[in-house]
Length: 176
View 1 (cartoon, rainbow, N blue to C red):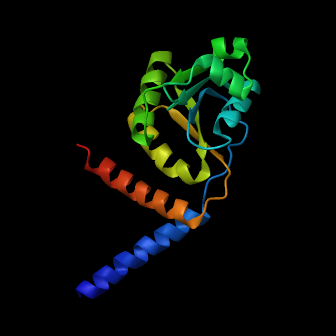
View 2 (cartoon, rainbow, N blue to C red; view 1 turned 45 degrees about the vertical axis):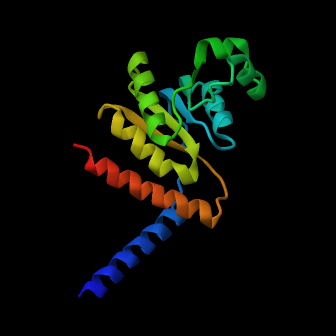
């Protein structure tokens, strides 16, 4: 009986991993939101956020998890952002160090701005956990759109992220 239960758990885990790996999300279609939220850590994320702002699909961009040593001028120079765009439309968040703290930083910024919709930009393999963490701390009436940056993750990256997703879901389920 115990062997069957363990076998069922292993199968469930394996099928879950396969489903996670083959159903990575895609970039979002044209949709307007109050803001675009970019979580640092992977190539193409900031460029995608800036593209969304330039196309008028979001009023402002919040970049969560910026290294505290990075100054606004350095950020603007690295990503070729004009001073006007930096002043009106880009906010750098320096408090987050992981996905869970990204969520807290995002929720605080969204509340301060009184925004009710946002586009979440992160790498495709990171989106499930990032979306879950961010959505769990935003008000239920907030619209959150997934906008995944395509990548070509290796098996190790997918395996690690799947396990982090499971741990995140379990820990969120334990919140009282």
